[in-house]
Image (tube, rainbow, N blue to C red):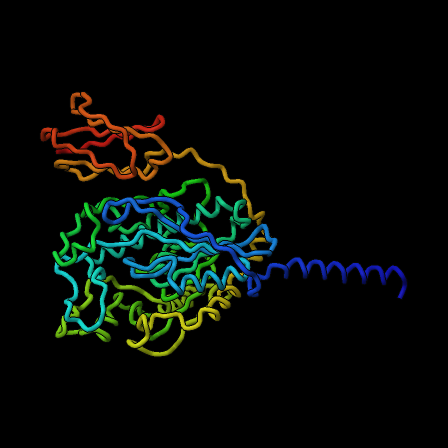
Amino acid sequence: MNFKTIVYIIFFIIFFQIHFCASAQFSYTASKYSYAVNKDQSYGTAIDYAGKLDTLEYDIYKPIGDGNAHRPVLIVVHGGAWIGGTKNDASIESICKEMVARGYVVAAINYRLGMHLSSSGGAATSCPVPIDNRIYIADTMEVVRAIYRGMQDVKGAIRFFKARHQIDSTCAENIYICGESAGSFLAYNTVLMNDATKKPMHCENITDAPAPHSSLVGYLPSGYSLKRPDLGSVGGNLNINGYNTKVKGIACFYGGVLDMDLFKNIDTPSIYLFHQTSDVVVDCGRASLLSIMSYNCLDPFGFMGCKHIWNMPLSYGSCALIDSLKKAKYDTAKYVDDIVQNTGPNCLQSPPGHSIDNIALRSKNIANLFAKEIYNTEKNSNCHPNIAVPDIDPLSNIICYPNPFNNEINIVNPNIYNSNCSIDIIDMQGKILYTKNITMPLQTISTQHLNGGMYFIRVQSGGYSYITKMVK
């Protein structure tokens, strides 16, 4: 072997060692980092179901000592049937710790909770099974609207964390979502509801919610509104900063969708699906939410006062979604079927059939799936794209309601913190009858002094003007 050949051999050995070390440095699969966490930070505000301003918070976990300038981001979304739960739930914190140890920046977020409640009341105190009476909601439209609001919040969080890529040393192209139960429904909708035509009609301006039963009023905030205004665009208006809301993958524990047509015309993210077939909260196949628990675990005939949970919509769980992915010939390398076939129903587990059996194992399976996508993105993008911030009309998502009105008008301007706003009430002759500065995302204007008739409502901000006609 001549000297030249030896030099080539040494060169290739060194090259492959360097290349291997560089690619293996950040595996995103091995659990090897300690972490620091910063809790109770805010990523924005939004109007909730009752017309109240809600501050949306997050906890952010960052690995220590990784030296990585382009970490992937995992946004973790808690469950709780859209009425409860928090970013501090034990299962959520466990997932966060598992994934930050693998080199992710992990953000656990809160989102808007709550739904209008039933006019016929909830379960009686004689029910031997403890039930949160907030689950007795006004109608199925409330679930659709709750998912939509939560989805808008998740999309706002995605834009927020993409814009922080330099602060957090992350790759703005490598964003992933993990959801548990209700949070998984939000994760699916965040990815699938990618077009204005997919907006559910129940998320437009619809009839007021019925007045809640007297036994349920105590669950509602003081001064609550029964109005159900248009909820705005599928992208929401939180943190409009020029970044899109695309993600590379989603991990769903006990997730599902209400509409299988959402899978039409979508990007093809990596999808991890975990479910137990014994789940009685979100059936793995096709059933109304909570119906299996209601009929099998509670008192199906109401003899003990438990009352059937009847007003939940039909959903399609992980088993149904896997079947759909297979029929659609979804790339088998892009999804993981982690469904536990343990029959059902399981009324003894807490929650019944609805708990993650081994978070460490499930997190490992998620990491193994997402690592492929992370590597591909790092290879084919610069991770930190320069995004031009668009000129945003601060009044693009304004809502005035009710119409017709009586003694007050509500003005919703979610972009209030980005601008100074004023409102004028003008009669049909063009005379300005009332002027006020708007200082809150939800401003209520007293109109008791106005006579019956037609008026123009004009909102102005930064050279933009919004005018609508309203009737008293």
